[in-house]
Image (cartoon, rainbow over all chains, first blue to last red; front, side, top):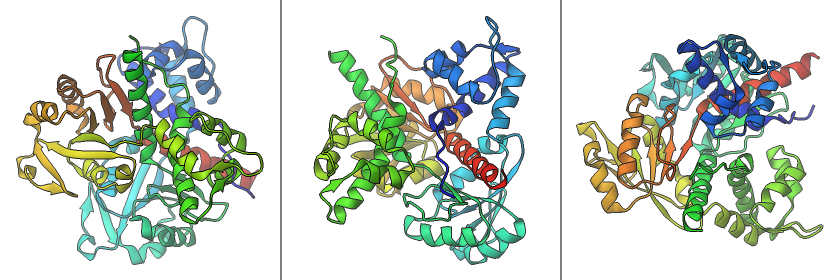
Length: 215
Length: 215
């Protein structure tokens, strides 16, 4: 088996922000939302929004738009966010602590059951209610939890060896916040976060605005 | 002036990881790199890589690929990463601390000159060499630094009021790690980071692999 390419990656990446906007309108009492409203909010083309939403299998009604509650259900089902998924976090430093405290993940069903770290002073302490366990018990603990998702926030030099342990422990998805390209078997998914991507976007956008002002 | 739409956003987002791979090969002594090699490393289609790279104005040679040092220069110039850019960080919590310590940003020319926080216990302390200053001196300090970029890692309820101060202080680009859609004048760029995007990708990819295994 080769790694599947996720063709609609940019679309999938946008769906969480759609969800955010749609839920906001739902709280304000609306029943329908148009693709144009989502597009305006996110500075996208309406056709792009319609294409992205079509991925989830829902179609809008002419002039009314999408029924909000059905749209939320469709997006959450497409993202598999309609069920709770247990995860562990490895590397309880500043980034790890920030991620554990990121409340939006819980809304999306991500349930961090434990954190692992190599620093004995952290053992047994709790970060936003999540207990820190010794990193060397990781393999056996993950197995006993039956957890399939791991969030990797260790220092880069330890990234590959940690990933090897995670794979042995039965982890099927690694959310990789290190800058290491991990080598894992084909049946394990790695989602690599590159914080520099956002900085690239910011720089290019600032440049476009500056050129617009000067030119 | 309306906000410019950055059409090639997914391409721009990929360029930093191209740079990472290309620099690695340069360190290994290579002079040329093919788009196919980059594509394999990142699990992309070669045509996509060629399109993305074409944005930077460089073209490869048949059979040899791209000359590595020219390619690095072209990408860095396109991203405006060929010069040092000063920035401030507002909100020196766990995420802010993690970002200040993220060494890759320095490689890309991002120079965080100061951090601001509301907690008096943090005033005057240093995070990875960056001094924490009182948040209520932010406007005057940013003006005197002449800084144009701000990284926003405050709690979401303070996001908009902080952004208002940043705009008054002359900030032109806000890298927004809160989940608030900021209201700013058209000449100010906001790059919003949504950590849930990566989680969405991970979930969909794990689902695709599972379906491949079962179906």
